[in-house]
Image 1: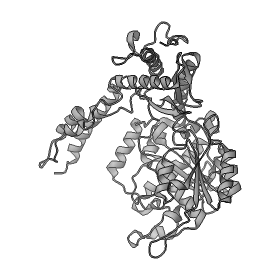
Image 2: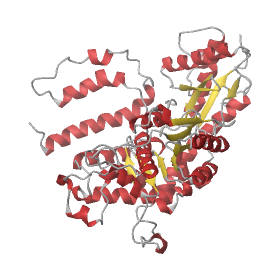
Image 3: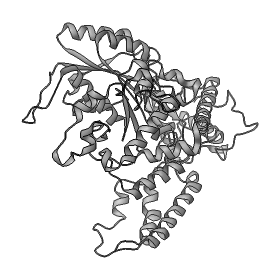
Image 4: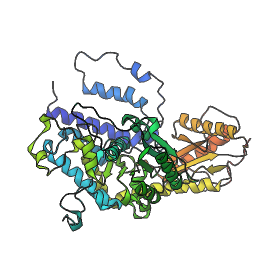
Length: 531
């Protein structure tokens, strides 16, 4: 019943061929799936097959049923969410991980799984200019020799989580441990003060709310700090909130600063927030889930300012770095708090290496016990592209976003809703519309028209309560022609929607949206009128 190596070779080649063909044709597919609710399920048998089915049958159903139900994140016309890029080396690394079938919960269950992860995360620290105290080796020089100031036993270290949400939860639990000295008693029951308070801005990712609920603190354990004109956390407001909570008998313990918010890419002033945290003894976590990859480029390394004062720092290579999902990195300055809060050691996991204290068991650095060999795909990607290759990718995405920003700036019919420091552009059509409700309705109609066309995919947010379209540029296959095509599609759709039109194929007489009109340079005045 089990495929032999020759059958595996045949089936794997067929699947790789299918994936390669998919990569070639993904640009021609509607970006947003047109499947209706329940459509995929009803197209498949309601019960599992009693007898084996051929691989050819499975592959045929992927093409016939599964593919139409996929929204194509790898399309160069995917501008909706931050990217989830699946590069060829990342796919190959994941394939090797699946083939080896490693369960890396302990060092002893596969030493290479642990030690390769430690190595590549130390590589990333040097690549991104992060502080040496986050290194797994305690701060080694380029030759690998232990730095004299680091001491014999490193305090910090890094670990690959599945997502930034899990990284944040681990940081919260460790911060709770440090703030309260919480420990499970012999009956497996523990308690911590209900007065604990965490802080994020009004723009902080929603995972902070969910993670605080999971950590037993609930919605009452979070205070949303006001933001400034750039939608970044206001450090003075943070300090005032902490002082107010202290005076009321509450216990502030945790601050989540964001470098590149999901809504608008706002960058919280981490150095000033760190000063406030040091003043009051709070754990500072920096969430740089998407934007963190930009630090690979020296000119964008301002985004790691203040990291030397952070207790934990995380980013997602599975977003902008070409490492396919899932791969989120969490670094901590003091591993003891994290390990103490998450470690449970039953008899069946005890082993000589663990008891020696000479190894890291990553089961103590995460919520689950088991873990995949995720570092393989990260290692493959870094070795395939090299640091300079990754810089080239990021720089091009930033260039394209800034090109779009300049087109918006030059067109009086459009406006930027927020600063665009890197690769996310938040924009609105305004035309001659005076009524904000009408403007919101038109912008929503523009986005829906584009998404329904299948030619591109956008998402939205609200800035100052107003509907705002988000253009996230980061697909590995994206080129200037795709961004230019989107700009043409936006303007054509705006004309139709502002005039009250609906339905039909957006773009009117513009033809192929990937081909600019006339000279190929966006006309700053085209599309500026409004019905």
